[in-house]
Length: 358
Length: 232
Image 1 (cartoon, chains in turn orange, blue):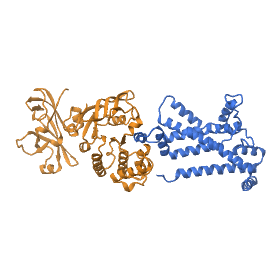
Image 2 (cartoon, one colour; image 1 turned 90 degrees about the vertical axis):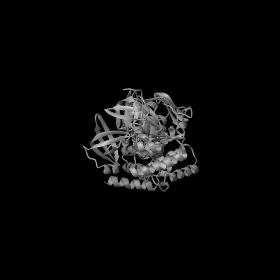
Image 3 (cartoon, helix red, strand yellow; image 1 turned 135 degrees about the horizontal axis):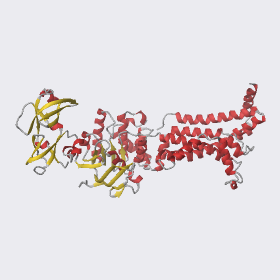
Image 4 (spheres, chains in turn green, yellow; image 1 turned 180 degrees about the horizontal axis):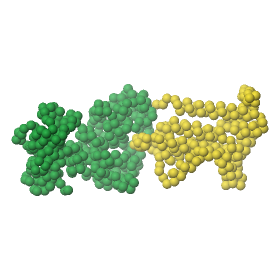
């Protein structure tokens, strides 16, 4: 799967094995220059393995990795010095914050004065200039992760490889850190690969997405496309398409699934052909009454689970199970309880259709 | 008890008067043991790092040999070195038997397994992901070793102390390969054995106290370095 944007990093025929078993197989993947590519997928899908291969710390059984058209393995140290990495753990060394940030520059032989200048600049950018003299062991989790990111930027890398750098910090800290990171990355535009399993993070930071499942590349594209228009059932399940119904096209733009008729404006399949109809739970709107517009399904509320800012409802209608995420305010207004009958409204534009080959 | 007090008094007198022979023996002891320790560190730390970081055929055997070596009786090492350096031995032509060099070799063989073992344990305890980060930062092989030494300096100072302690305190091997020749290969331990045999307990006690104080000072310095606040 390649994309038309100019590729900075190219992965071709990559196979990484562990104990003789392939854990990652990618035919082709291009990482566009100056953009943030989010690498998403469930646990064990090979995201970190891909990053490890690109950092040249994992040795592929087969395949080529190129940076600007040159083999990354030709001179691994030289290649690594064009890149930098940050992980879920800050992985700071036993030295001061400033010394940690200066370290990649020191390894590259940058003189002391320039090192100091760059370290101070990046500490300032990440809002931790006051911590410069503090020992790395005396930092909070959020502070340490800021140091780790400042260190990653300090060597002014062409390529940034980030493995869930925001997932190890608490929610409020994370929010501020992502905000600062987004601003810095939009200004400096390094080619970035960001491994994440967080949908919001992927949508917010990613220009491009690559989705891995069971060691294989299943879909690439804009993050919103991957999340809203999954390529197959497995991708749909991973991206949180809670409603995936097997159906058939009955007429132009209309499908039958579980005894329910659903219109869709999405790409079509041949008449009578099997299809998977996918709807995100937040796209299912519940009302007490029918109002005659769009897809309307009468259903009964079976279970109710509060999930932060929404209430997740499991509903049944004829032979169809539905899942809806209702915002708290709307939920309070509806005043629903288990056993109540409601109308589930789904806009035709929100019904994504996948050709069902199963 | 009188014997002991007389010994301590004699030791104080010998120190106070700056006895030439004691000073000479002390300096020779320090030089031989420091050389053996320095060589053991030069060889042992990289070897410990390789054993900690790499997986290869025969690694388990080498680690087992290192662990055995950590408890190797000095007389066995002395016998081995003596057989090799003996005039009719494989390296007899070098004429090293009964020289300080032979003693350095013997002490090196005694302290090397300790240095390798302590280095291996220290470096193995480093988070493997931190080592991955060192590579990711663009470090070359030697820079990774330097960062590992820096990161494990507490454990490695323990290796220095153990290595130096093994070298300076052993007597059997030094006697076997050095011969305890006055003015040439006599060190504090061998001199102590000799004076005890002669019944010169005052001198033996004086020599022993010098040895203990010397070992204490070296370890005090190393411990101070080890335990001070982390440097930036």
